[in-house]
Length: 222
Image (cartoon, rainbow, N blue to C red; front, side, top):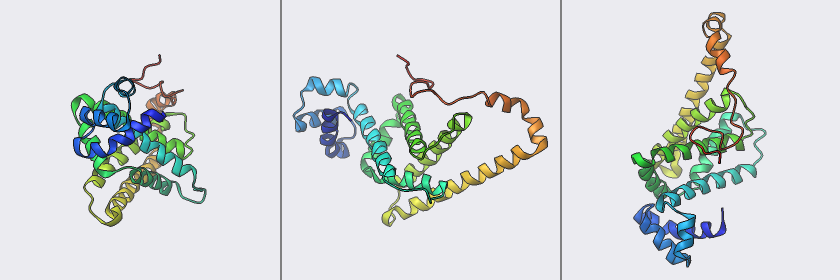
């Protein structure tokens, strides 16, 4: 993250807990960090929304760094995903996430919020070494978006020691996904099912992962 941008975000954290991710928070952060208003506006043109986006993306980066420092070669894949989500939530402040969740639940910012969740899911799978390039690239991230989103909402209301109830909730959600994948595999091995879905399966086989971050619906290629 750009040093000036990071400095402003650092200054905003104490204000966002009280004033939310807002223009008030941005102006206070610019004052505290001694940043000229013109530069602050250039770095955060949408004010508090861009501050919230930057905070979310910092959490993704912190999670990636933590995972990169770990040897997970002996860890089963479901446990790796659980660890990644745990590291992601431990990288952020609960109240600041609560403020961000409120902001991105507004209709005008809902698409931005969905994009950020997708970005987190992509960051997790990429950090874990996902090599899929077909439709599984999309299905893995879509599934993880649902698991991560539900876990965040549970975590925001969790008052247990060390968020133990959140981690138990996460394990249950991942167990549900694992069971679904096993059922899907059995269906795909069934001759009748293969015959019934031969047409759709051929269509899905043509789907490929995006070439770059801009090669996604709603993303500008310019």
